[in-house]
Length: 392
Ligand code: CMC
Image 1 (cartoon, rainbow, N blue to C red):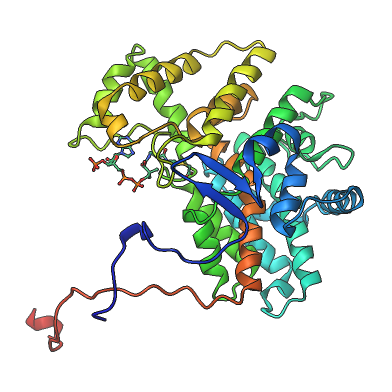
Image 2: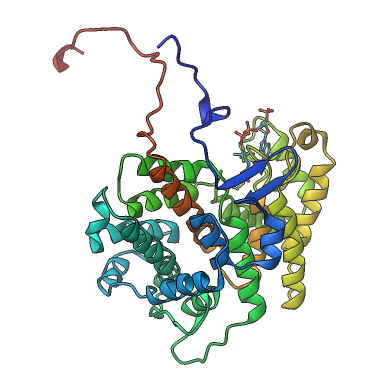
């Protein structure tokens, strides 16, 4: 044990070799399978990027058609899953509902528990996950609202179908707004993978015990939920709202974030790897402006966010520590403009991250990686004898 080095938070520990995502924190570069994130966000779509992450190459026309057709065909979920959903009180956070419903797939497809699934069986599980996650996400929201759920519409594309399941009401005709569906698609691309972050490492480590792919992804959703990870997008909007309701004094909150005796952090700022800028934040900031403009929305919270960013980027505390806005800083502003409620923001992140988790799980399996099992340095009591309760 003398040889064990402790590295809290694994700040300098590489857990795997990976051929999926390249990230250069100093230069602010992010590439999926060699393609720059800017290029993909501008020219590709979410299902194509998902195919790329999962299979390693961009699909041909016929590969893309087969992939998206299969996903469309599996959007329906077992009716009994509605009974599980009904058991959740309306105050349930949709992230907990989502991870539970995803985990319930182990019960509906028990074959996934067999570690010796064939490649074909694995591909089917992946298709099911991609297809059913939007249905579960929209249903989690409907349950919260106390509304009847909407069934998937297989005539729509991935994002259009999701928006319709979220927002269609029984008595009204729902038309998908192309501006909204394109904006959502872009956000999903930007979230699709980010190498060995907390949730992805969780997916790989759970999968390394040969647990079912559904159980592994469910664990990833729970890891993403925390406010230091994906949950930051919800916390950012709550913070911006609080600043707005407190008279819009962003300087005051900046001071709080700098105060080491105050647990408050500037949410949506800082990153373990990016020490120059987060390329996703750049794209999202521009997209936020575009989307609000196209939808004719004037959101005071966007102004506060920009003010806060400028103030932080000119403050020595943030400059010295290389703290920049991350992916979560502006994404919530777009989600709001699309009509998505605050407690669904992290669910949106999960929808985007799914192909990345799946690709990383698959890579872990194909590499035959050993079970994830870090070591420790023991600092507790030395040997001592049991004392009967009446003598303590
Ligand atoms: N506000 C104020 N101070 C900060 C912040 C912040 N947001 N982030 C880091 N710092 C300070 C921190 O106090 C420390 O200062 P000092 O050296 O004086 O002790 C220094 O900067 C280094 O921070 P750290 O906590 O050691 O860095 P880390 O790599 O462990 O944490 C982080 C990275 C993202 C968890 C952190 O920056 C943070 O908590 N940010 C706010 C939450 C957030 O936006 N999370 C989303 C991350 S991006 C998307 C995702 O992962 O989902």
